[in-house]
Image 1 (spheres, rainbow, N blue to C red):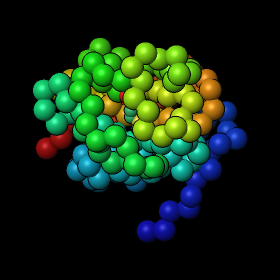
Image 2 (cartoon, rainbow, N blue to C red):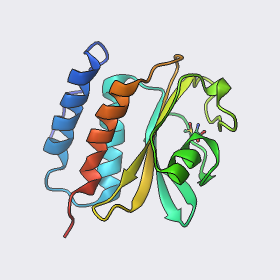
Image 3 (tube, helix red, strand yellow):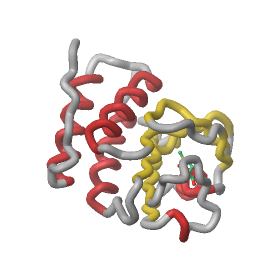
Image 4 (cartoon, rainbow, N blue to C red):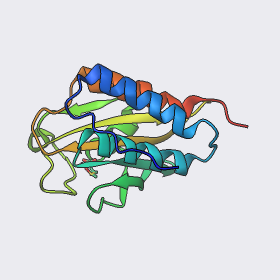
Length: 163
Ligand code: SME
């Protein structure tokens, strides 16, 4: 199936996230493979929104995140819970918006072009934390509550029951 490349960079955020939500459901409705789902969502969001880095860090051991499907330059491999923006979001199980990465103590820099960041926890149907979704942008203050709500809603994809 040839998918047209979505370009949502000039859309109002609420419309952009609604479109991403609809495309995710249509692309993945008969898939039951978490890695394939993460890879597809990372590609869809990254290319449609023009972000710098977009991807998942998966929970691979108690209190340890490891890089999963992503788009962008090479990401750091392992991040312990409590470290950096990703590890803090995982430990506290809450979305973190960082308007200026240079002002976040302990921020882990994987790409020097990153200026702002959002990290959203990903949970499964049982409420277990399975990953965080991390997005970096090359401009300061790129992310706000609309991004948070849009991404949190998109990532409810992983809460659907599995067979
Ligand atoms: N900046 C993140 C590390 C991951 S990269 O941005 C891809 C952090 O501080 O956790």
